[in-house]
Image (cartoon, rainbow, N blue to C red; front, side, top):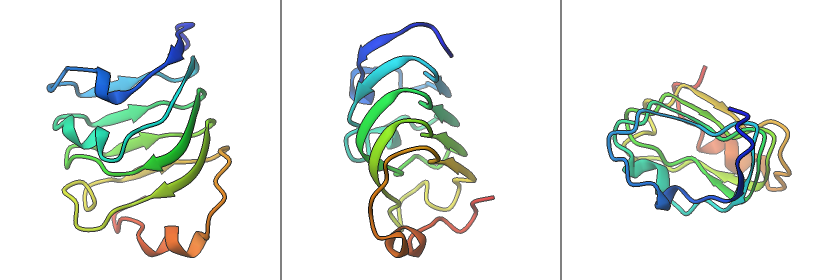
Length: 117
């Protein structure tokens, strides 16, 4: 958190399959997250990329271990939850506040995971 990191970042560049916690909040990172990139971190419980400059589509496809995702304060323009994926039933907290999301909200609400708090 707030480590003065800057530049382009991609989840695909990390090679830590046992990673459980990823907190890159409040830096100056940018880039897009490829579809399903986070689901390959099978033990990832928490991801926090808030307070950066990530943009594009915020893909909410995670592994079953993921309980918490904070994508707030970025520049994401759309969001998507995929039903029938491994992490769909286990995700509990998602923060997408303070982004530039510009899409039909009914499509977002239609696919919200059932266990969000």
